Every structure is written in C-alpha cells, then in structure tokens.
Image (cartoon, rainbow, N blue to C red; front, top):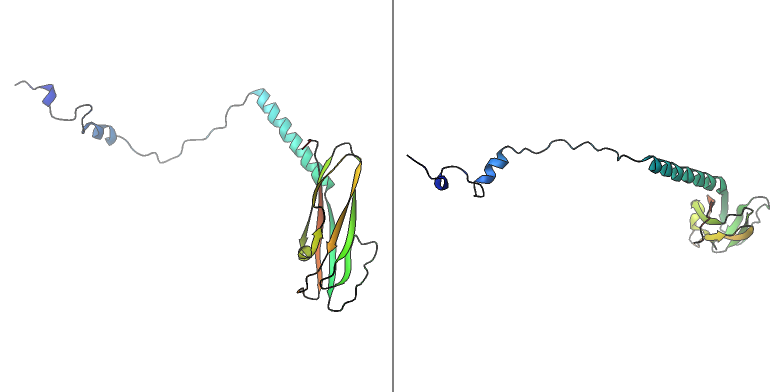
Length: 176
C-alpha cells in the first residue's frame, strides 16, 4: 500500500503541528552567560590610565584646597548682643532672636589656574546661616570676600548652636 506524502501522519513543515517538535527539546537557560571585559587595545588602556590619573590629581587638589571653619552662635532670650572674640573665624557670639551678625571670610587665589568655590554649612547652625555668594569662580591672582551671616529665627530655642562652614575650592582650568 502506498501512502501519499501529503496525507502522511505526523507534523508537516509549516503546519500547525511542526512547532511541537522544535519546542519539545527546548529548555530554559538556568544560568546567566559569563560576562567578559571587552578586549582593549594598548592605546585605549593608556588613555584610560591617563584619565584616571588626572581625576586622582584633580580630586587630591580639591581635597587640599578644602577648608572647614567651626561656627557657633549662642541664641539669647534678652536683647543684648555678645561680641565674639576677634580670633575666632566664625564665632558669632551671643545673638538675640531675629537679629543678624556678620562675619567675613577672604579667599585669595595665588595660582595661575582659576578656582570654582562652593560654600555650604552643616550642623545645628545651618538653619541660621546665610551665605551671600555660595557658588562663584575665583580668577587667577584674585581675591573674594564671602559674607557669612548668622540670623537666629524668632522661634529658636535659647541655647548654643554649633556646626561647620565648608569652603571647597576646586581647580577649574576650563573657560565655562
């Protein structure tokens, strides 16, 4: 007895049953493929090493130019203002609520490279500190005076508030 191939039992390629044969041997992969570092040419490794070295030097210079100043203010119930000692940089002394006391920090750039300067405060005193120019560019062989004002809130508790004012000076040889 001869059989016709077109009516033979079983899946025929392209028929609805042909996918079962392909799928029956398929199993999901249980592990991820190993990730490999891309192969880098020698010039790429040298360029990468130079960029990393420049970043290390730049961050070291930034850390070297960073200064931290302790800051404190005594909030008083009375209306008298206590004068701070002149040698303490950011000691605002005794201040009644709602009044402001100013101190100044003068920065000088004696290098031929301009500096970007960022000034911020942290600690208990940060709510009272107002910095007039917190982000600016200090040109080569230039100086700039920052005015730091402590203005206790009218609702502040009468006690000593302490914190720090950080002045970060980072070398910025770019024109922007």
